[in-house]
Image (cartoon, rainbow, N blue to C red):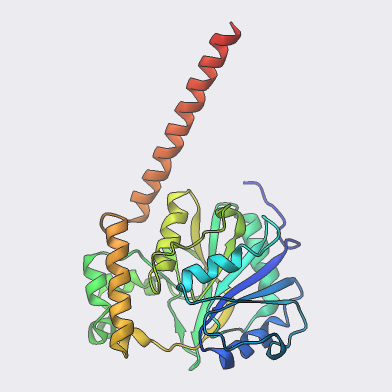
Length: 293
């Protein structure tokens, strides 16, 4: 496997703000310890931010626009990155980097593993509890079970496997999808910068993004050396409006993928495209040989 040194690659952070100004200050403070950071791009959907309020020892770009959804906001910010080979951290505004000095480890890991399209860091809550930043793709059992706290607390085997609790939190592993709360990505995975399907206004855009990565032949992995703190609001469990949003996005996801996709089914689609591209290339070669002959 070819090893590429990405430690000198440009590094950008893109986040979307919606009434999270106080949390955003913590993110900015923690990013000050990352010397490789070229720019923080903030897409403001609530109109509460101003350039004067965003003091930072690094460049900050503020984009104000109407709230068209979290995924749409991230895509808008990604289009502002002037290079095509950057590493970008897409994250919620309510995260804080706890190990900023470990960015070089992220870059080196992605350089040594060129199949990795996205890398999920270790996530802890404001109460210093490690949570699952990676999960398996949903199936009918897990999509129903995760709504019941009492069942999750009992930790049956299929829940252990869904949250990757059976793997622990200390070692890297390949995962189906990583939480959009914080996700390191190669900017080159989507040349048009449309990382996220903008039909998902809120929730499941990260699940779909990772499914699209697998479908294109990339992988998603968990990287515990890099740690972030996430202020968990868990609004979908407390507010009926956000619960409705969560269920609606889940139904959109199932409709889009014609059911519950698996990593293997997405890989088959990727392999099928590769086979068709290979056949097309061979047919083109035959035609060109005939013309030359």
